[in-house]
Image (cartoon, rainbow over all chains, first blue to last red; front, side, top):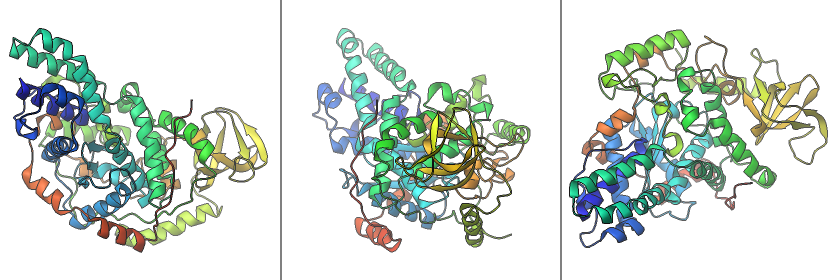
Length: 326
Length: 172
């Protein structure tokens, strides 16, 4: 029973990062202390658990897309990220930062201090202040334990079903996963995203950067996506960049005169000798479609709108889902 | 072909020229997201040049912090940047980063070449769902960690120093 709950927790956290429920049962019981009962696990994941779960999630994400083969770039992003994380209330987490070798535009935060940004997003950035804004947003999710809180809420929701179905383990497991799926299909609530935006601005400023790097990135995303019909669904299921700008502007307006100007250092470029992003998997059909769409639409943002395996339509928002932590 | 490293200084000069108000070949159009005053200076307590209406457009001729320097039919001045949206690129104009108004304003970027997308698609939900833990990559990630000392040394060398800034609340 404990074991099943542990499985579900990790599955749910995977879902929190990928934006989708993971139905597979995972053998991750080792991540949690043996003596911890269900209630304790749900109510108060300690920091050690949080880190263990985040590490598992990050490792799986690396299984989907490897790191860009540019060690100097990776070390650079770790220096910048760590410097920003040092300005938070959780400076002693094992902060890891990485640039994933994929053309998708995305960024991920996993509990316990794991932050991954895609090469597609990284290459859109013009300054270290913009990078600081993006990393600051992700760091904000981790410092605020947003994913952990959602997990705990869904654990509470499923508590009733757990009691009723205690005798039937398979039903119980499906029920827990089902509850997790429902919760995590919605991703983090908008409030968490807006909060992470506000934190990202503040952390960048604390680290000595211009507070407005994140704002510039949101403007870029808004302008990039506005004419891309394949992104229409994104705006149905996620706060659009414009909505985030409005929220952020309202929060910032009273503070704007008092905020420091900050610096906008140049950002390190990906080593030009690094090959283009490698395919996560060989996918000639989708690739051909992507090229076709590019020719038709003139966009260089990789589209997730092509039909996926098994004829199911992949949410076009998928390429942006996870941006800054969803 | 020039590498980005070499091209950067030239690009920065171009950007500086734009910020100085020099003629910009491509107008950077923005649209007002809400009624907003256009100020004579980038401050909320500066005098107002004019009041712009939702849907009004302007040409961006510079930026400063949270402010955009706009040229509008009613005059030039400064607008709170959150109150505009950059117009997306013209259909078929190509690159969405360097070619867009926002891309130009915030610094030109190299475009992603077409070859980088042939036969390749990005990481998606399906990939994440099906992926298994990659121990080798995790080992690499561990190896890239920066210590506090290294991070601070690097930040100081870049001219960065910590600043006290309070967290902010959402505004109703």
